[in-house]
Structure formats: structure tokens, C-alpha cells
Amino acid sequence: MLFEIKNLVVHYEGAEVVKGISLEVDEGEVVTLIGSNGAGKTTTLRVISGLKSPTSGEIWFQGQRIDRQTPQSVVKVGIIHVPQSREIFPYMSVLENLRLGAFLRKDKDNVKKDLENLLENFPRLKQRSRQQAGTLSGGEQQILAIACALMANSKLLLLDEPSCGLSPIMVQEIGKIISDINRQRSTSILLIEQNVRLALKLAHRGYVLETGKIVLQGTAEELTRSEHIKKAYLGG
Amino acid sequence: MDASAWIQAIANGFALGWMYVLIALGLTLILSIMGILQLAHGEVYMIGAYVTYFLCVSLGVNLYVSMALSMIVMAVFGIILEKFLFRPAQRQVLPPIVISLGLTLILMSFAVTTFGLKEKSIPRLAEGSLMFFDSAVPKDRIIAVGFAVALLILVYLFLKRTKYGQAMIASAQSPEGALLRGINPNRMSSLAMAIGCALAAAGGTLAGSILMLNPSMGTFPLMKGLVIIVLGGMGSLLGAAVGGIILGLIDGILPVAFEPGIASVAPFIIVIIILLVKPQGLFGHE
Image (cartoon, rainbow over all chains, first blue to last red; front, side, top):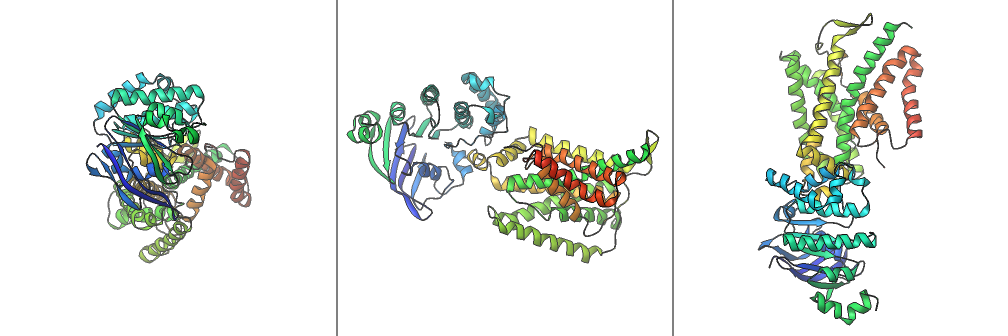
């Protein structure tokens, strides 16, 4: 197993928000974490990337235990977190942002090649490479944030609401980018999405998180057919 | 007033302005990366000047070598301050203020007990003057401005062209974004303090060779530095440079053009007017 969470418990300001969840992501898999606001999805991602400490439980990546580590060492093993707020650097150029994505990499020549390839794959970014990142549209900023994560040569991507606040056309484009990344680079992805339809289209498997507990799990097909999902997340 | 007095005033303004820029650059780096208003930065400037004085006058080391050594000593001092004083107080509001104010008193008392209250002087950077339109401009002022400009360019190139410089800018713009790319925030804080303190030491030395050294020489430049970063826009390096020169020119020219009373209040009035028009500062974001 590439990535595994075992019995994770997390407190946030005294309240238990993640109540002992376990989940797995296999090599080359897209796994989605579905749940309403406040279910504990974002908190789970923040714990994985080392921004927050768990109360108990274990997180394993490629046979290595990575809970309670600094964000730097999590990035170093190949897990990149793209938060909902994107956290690009607004007053730096698109190019500078992309280079910083590869901050911890030592293979300078490959970074250069990767940057060129990436710009070929993302013509929107190439067009605006000298522009300040903050002047991009919301969708372009999301693409930039994902592209920065790719520059880190990540093995597992943690995407938090990548389609949030985007136009329907942009949502389609982001969806295509995510599935391309998974297919062409065989990067594993743990995806949080409010847009459950999109999430189940992109994912192989999924978990449903409600008030800190996993109440349902299965393949994307099983979840799409589930009455519970239909009622609670797909509007009947 | 004749032309030569004006040229003198402008030359003095530029020299003063660049000393302010050196202070303001450090303040703004420390503020934007660590989120700390380093109120003892003026005292770092003062101690930097005394370290040069000690090396150059007491030990007889060459002035320029002394200045370089003083910058290194203060950079190391900055790293120590960051690690043991400011880091434990990270992300809090009052403790850093209390710490930096306390540090002000400690450093000032240290200077008083070690070097005394009597004013000291560092040798001039150069003797003689150059003629500009029939009026003499002392060479040491020109050299001081040259040094300050060179340091500013170095800092700019470091921030713009090197990986760690870029990481510093990134940490200032989005601390969480920087963390998620694997940038170590503690290392960025150390760098900010090291660079800031080295610049202050250079500023203190240059000012000390033009004016005099005394234990309270850092108070006034700190106030100027604070005004500059507000004027230029919080966290903007370009703003710090332009703000510094504007303030220096105001300080150099007004005392010649008006009576001293007006001259000492005027800079603040001008800054208030600028901020009324552009509240985010000249080059501020948001």
C-alpha cells in the first residue's frame, strides 16, 4: 500500500473533529473523500501534510511512518498538499511560483526540463508566465497551484476542493487536468470535493466522512449507485 | 539661499536617506518574514557602529575590513537573537514587543558601560571633496551612498535571483504556501535577521564615520525606519528604498530652506499627507 491512515483522531480547539478514521490510497489510484462542511476533510489533509498534529493514530507512506513530522519532511517524501486557499505567491510571477514548487529538489537539470514540459502542457500558464500570479483568474490560479505541486515531483497529491468557486467550464478543465495527471504520471491523488458528481467521476474509490467518521466506502461505481449518496450529496 | 547651499543640502539628504534605507530594509525584511516589529533594530545599528569603532580605532584594523567584520558579527548576533529570543515568541502579539523593547535597553546599557557616554568617532571614509557646480561635496558622503546603493543592489539580486531569496519572498507573501513547498520557516527567519542586522551594522558604520558615535545614536534612525516602511508600504523593499530617499531629502533640504522648528515637524506632516492619499503606502500591496 502506498499510503495508509490508521485510526486517526484529531482535535481542533478542544473538540474531536476526526474520530478514528482509517483510509488507504494505492499506487496510481484516485481516492475521494466526500462529506459536508465540517465533516473533518480539510483537517485530515492538514494533518497528513504536517500543518497540524494528530491526537492519535498513524499515517504511513511507502512503509515509512510520517505522522507528527514537519511539513518539510512530508514534502520531501513526495506528498504535496494543495489547500483550498491555493496559497500561491500573488506578487511573484507564474514562472517564479513554478520554480518554488521544486524548492526541495536537488536535480537542477531535471527541474529545468520539467518546467519546460509543464509549460507545454499548460498553455494558459505559458501565456502568462511573466505575469504576477495574483492577477490570474481563479481557475488559472488553481491550475498554477496544481502545476506547482507537479514541479515537486510528487507521488501523492492532496487536493482540497480544486473546483471551488470556478465556472462550469473551468471545473471541466480542472477535472481533465486531474485525470490526466493521474493517467500520464500515475500520480496518486487524494481528492476532497464538494462537487460529488465530479469527484465520483474522477475517483476510483471513495470514502464518505460524516461528523468525523467514515460512514461509507467503496468503488466510485458503488458509491454512485448508493441511495445514501444520492439522497445526501447528489440531490435525490 | 545660493545654489551651493542647495547642493550641500541635497547631498546631505541623499547620504542621510541611504542610511535610513539600510535600517528600513532590515526592519521590513524582519517584519514581513517574522511578523515582528524589531524595535531594537536601531540599537543593532548602534552596536554595529561600535564594533567597527572597536576593531578600527582600538585594534587598528583597516576601516573597510572593520566594517565588513562588523557586518558579519552583527549577522551572527542577529541569528542568535532570532533563535533564542524571537523564535519562542513567534505568532504572539505582546511578547515580541516586550522582548525588543527590553533588548533596546540592554544593548544601550551595554554600549554605555563598555564604551562610555562620551561621543566617539570612526575615521572618515575618505578625505577631501568633489566639486559639483562650484560647490564642494565631501567625498565620504559620496562613498557612503555608494556603499548603501551597492548593498541594496546585492540584497535585491539575492532576493530575485537565488533560491533562498525567492523562498524568503514567498514566506512573506504566504507563510503557509511556503511551508507546503518544503521551505523551513525558521531558516527564513534566521536569514531575515542575519541580513537585517548586517545591513544595520553597515548603516551604523557609515553614519558613524560621517557623524559621531554615541549609545543613543540608534533611536532616531529607528523612528525614521519605521516611518519609511509605513510610507513605502509594509513589506515592500522598493518602497523602503524610495521612502528612505524621500525622507532623507526632506530631512536634508528642509532645515536649509525653513527654520529648524518647521523642519523637524515637516517630514511627519508630509508623510501623513502621502498616507492620506495612498493609505497602503507608496508601493504597498492590497
